[in-house]
Length: 162
Image (cartoon, rainbow, N blue to C red; front, top):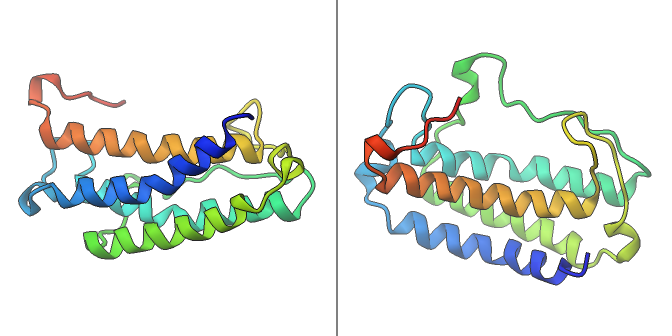
């Protein structure tokens, strides 16, 4: 857990990185669907915004509960529901930034005891506030990588997710 300052800095910087990145993409590329089962870039941005309250709630539960039990986050039960709601990019980026600001306010005042708190989550063998914070950062960057791939990668080289 020696990398907590680095994790916090990464979480802090994700807002700027995402905003600058999305701002560099031409509007006509934002809603382009590259094939069946592919999200658009705009849907990835919307998803990043939409999950921020759920992630904040998980951080709060680690701060307020001993060994919280979590359930998996599944946006919908059918394919149509698995696509994030369409939110205009500027609004999604603002929602992302506000959610991240709230998360950081809690994480920055967490002491070592909070960072070591564990909980249970059926998807993971281990789950703690530390793992959650690292997961949030990796989730941000996975979606940003996927958006860049959808934006720039030629069809023959595009990663097809199952």
